Image (cartoon, rainbow over all chains, first blue to last red; front, side, top):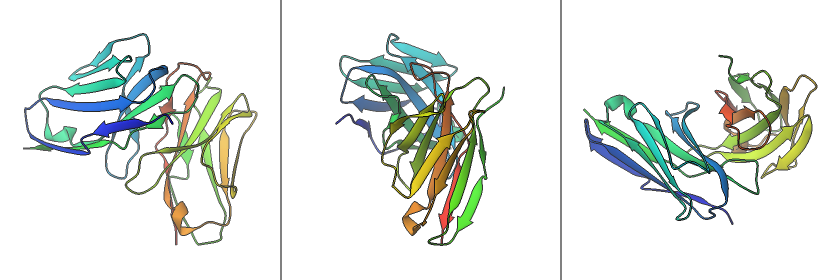
Length: 112
Length: 113
């Protein structure tokens, strides 16, 4: 079964610290991987999309890397701010599939 | 830029009632996906359509049905509602089914009482 795992489930850091969020997936045959942000009870905001041929994507303070061979992606958020507090979801589109398979998310709290 | 539109944004129904959720994809997007996110859970894929034909099916109950219309909007029909159907329902759209990004709508929050 193709699965997506995010560890840890929750993370609390002081403001200014860099955040490192991990995502692992069981099958290296993927189309792409997306990172989303979700605030409590709200919708999904797409942060970054990495195609299978790419190694990383950057947007502002966000950087996501992809290592297909090891089935891992990492989302880095530099110089965290209290406004970064949210749940971050990783979603993978496996090559034999059209849907996105989501991880359970990492809930981040940035303390002022 | 135009985004995915979902209506209604909030819906309250009683058990055994019927609900219809609507999704309007981004212009020129021909593929629509439906996901269900229960409280404290990650989104789970329900069903998708490409060029008005069902393209994939996930863990969608038999009480639910969906279709994509000629203008590419999609509707999710839910009958005999149960308390466990209370969730956030997301629609996403993309151009084609390949490597293109899925863009998500704001979701419809369904509460079954």
